[in-house]
Image 1 (tube, rainbow, N blue to C red):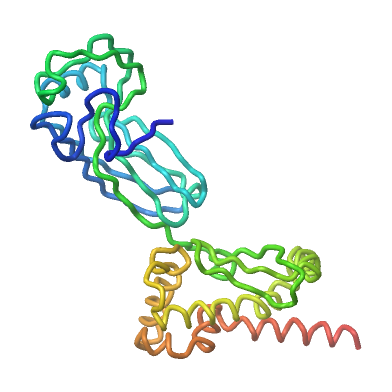
Image 2 (image 1 turned 30 degrees about the vertical axis):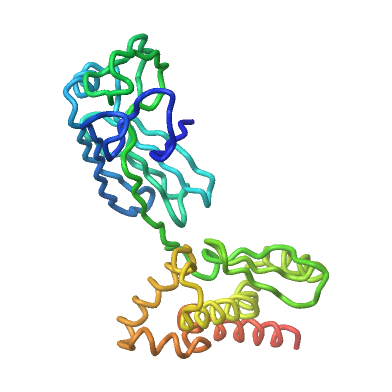
Length: 284
């Protein structure tokens, strides 16, 4: 896979979104993201490179526009070839959190004598041998965030086996909130998690507290970098929806983390109590 970084030096001239290896040539890739639909995000590009020689090579198919899509949260990395500014579709199941899209121009075939009249002075009169797949131009990176549209209780947190300590610990530093359950209790959680009849109780035990703590962190605004995380943006998005639906200011919701957590989870405690009550009735 290509290593695309406009800040590093390549062993041959590469066009960037600012003049460097070329005297006047720059590469601009403007992107528009549509979606999500039920299954994909659509990225609509608009490429522009102000160099007649490179434009001709693109028309001839010697070079090609492309988009590299990277989502570090899912380890997804894909290079999409683009012709005539056609849009690309990305399977939404491959994405969550921050997604980077890098416009580029790459070689579609081997080129033995690659040169350009607009090379910077240090490269004038020199030709280069390029192989198919080499990068010739790198645009400015574009970013978008994929919000979790599934059940908030399962989409923004991950339960893992913790240490032998008795306390449940939460890590809010990543895209997904990591909930560490003490080792001796994790097996019980895992077994109960497979039983749909116990899901409401599990959510009430674990998720309400986690969402409450997340809301408290958001209200304090202690760590501005957490605002870039997927869980933070997802809860913010859900808060906006809740604020409009309940006609309550978002800040007021943040100041009542316990009540707001219950609202975000659809007052799940009611279903949990009903499940427990049903079990008691059956026991009689």
